[in-house]
Structure formats: C-alpha cells, structure tokens
Image (cartoon, rainbow, N blue to C red):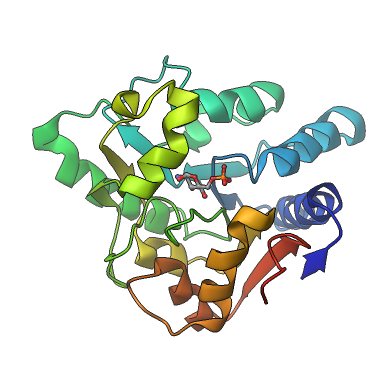
Length: 244
Ligand code: GLP
C-alpha cells in the first residue's frame, strides 16, 4: 500500500494494531506483538500512545517481543533498543512490565545461545506472534538478519554488516562506537507471525524496496523471504515506492 506520506500511513497501521488489541480483549486473550525500532515505526508508536491517552486503549493484555538489540549493550545506554522502546512507547502506556521482552544486550557470552533459544520458546509458549511490525535496513535486513541469513534461522547473535554500522554511525557519534554484533529474532521467528507489516519511508529506501518486492527470493536480500508469507503488507510512502 502506497501512501502520500509516512504520517498518514502510520495512523492506519496503528489503528490496525489497536483493533487487534481490542479484539483480543473481547476474546479474553493476550495480544502478542513483535515490535521494531528505528525511525520508521516512531509515528505508529506516537499514535498508539495517543489512542491510550485520549481514547482509553489499554495494553493490559499485550505481550511484546522486540526484534533485536545491539550486543554488547546495556539497557541504560541511550543507544539501546531497550531505551528506545521505553522512550517511544512503554513509558507512556499501561503494559505490565513483565509482558515486555527485549533481547538482553548484556547476556554473558556463554549463555547467549541458550538465551536465544529461550526467546523463541517463550514466543511459542504464549501462542506465537499475532502481529509483527518491521522496518528494513538498506542491506535488506529485517530485524538484524543481514545478507546470508537462512530462511529457517531462529533468534541468534549475528555480526552486523558494514552498511548497517555505517548507517548507525551518526547516532553513535562515529563508526567506531557502533557495536559489531547484535541479537536478532530469526527469519523463521518473524515468518511464523500471523500478520506482518513492513514500513519504509523515503527515497533512500526505494532501491532496497524494489529489490525486496520485485527481486528473486534470496538470502542476499533477507527481506525477500517475506514474499513467501501469506499475510504481509508493505506500507510505503511515495519516496520508498518510487522505483517500483
Ligand atoms: C535497524 C534495526 C531494524 C530497522 C532498521 C532501519 O537496523 N535493527 O529493525 O528496520 O534499523 O531503521 P530505520 O527505520 O531508522 O530506517
């Protein structure tokens, strides 16, 4: 779906999420959301916060799993995705803190493999993701599934692509400050979600959006795996859609 601007698009996506949360409340079930960081979803979170404050949308039944976190990275750091999510969403809504799951960027090296397996197991135990929100990196990564990621990959520790680190460098005040690794949900973890919405705004995403939507499915552009998912929508603005 192509919108004139990111704001208009984000409102529509936020309302789909709100509708799902309310539907699950009526059914007396938890609503399991997979959430993303980056600049792309910020307006969706803004609208969800507005719906909570002004229209009484409650998040008491929402359980969230974030896609990724830098490694190593402490929660308190302003660069952490933990910090980002609390700033943009969790500090402003009534979600119980025990329902928030974000990969732990300080997990010990020798515990990380088991930790990642447990992350996937926890998602399965609560019934699987109902909705996964995604952005896309210029390498075609979703979460931090960089080129070369296997379609059956689960949550794991990965090495970041140079392009990804370079894109993150300004906010870290220099490339050398950007962590070299991250923990990310896997391609398979994401693809098991019942519904996926990928957001992309602006001309600098146009090339990767074209490759992702029109290119062959390949581990070289991990987001192309979404072509094989039966309930995925790409929500774009005119800029991101300009090469389609
Ligand atoms: C990071 C995140 C991704 C995100 C991407 C794009 O790499 N790990 O989940 O999709 O950035 O970020 P932005 O939305 O700022 O373009």
